[in-house]
Amino acid sequence: MRVISGTARGTRLAELGDTEIRPTLDRVKESFFNQVGPDLAGLHFLDLFAGTGSMGIEALSRGAKQVVFVERHSQAQSLIARNLEKCRMTLDNQKERWQLVKSDALKCLPALEEKGLAFDLVYVDPPFAENLYEPCLFQLSDSKILKQEAWVIVEHFHKNGLQESYGRLKTFKDRRLGDSCLSFFKIEP
Image (tube, rainbow, N blue to C red):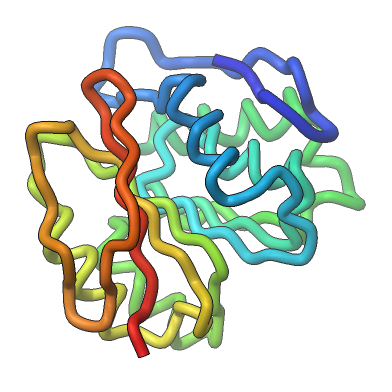
């Protein structure tokens, strides 16, 4: 697992090994960033169920203005901090660009809304077996944390099909990559 592009390009990220945390594969990450674009300058990125932090770190490396990592597991939180340090993103001039929220993703969304945060890209990658897609997508649809042109991208097991819509969120494309699938949603006016 590595950073593919940007300021931290080529940096190998640490993994937990035998654990419940399933890191996003490099080919899935590469496909994701090919779809959203290589330059994220000025964008706000939310990495829900952040795990190793690889998606948010890739976004920072590609110029995202702000990344919020949300992770409930303490081992994964430590791993995210270690990976941020490996990528030199813990230096004083980088610290204001990211925030690690140590919380359950669904409980965290109202708190992010209360803080007035809004995001251009939201990456949703819950544990495949926990069936959190529907509650998460409905909660995102009802929240005010999505900017008008925001994309919500969900990584899921390809056999776990998602609905075409969840409240205001409508799917506009899917990409299958081995056993994983990326489903792209945006707000329908």
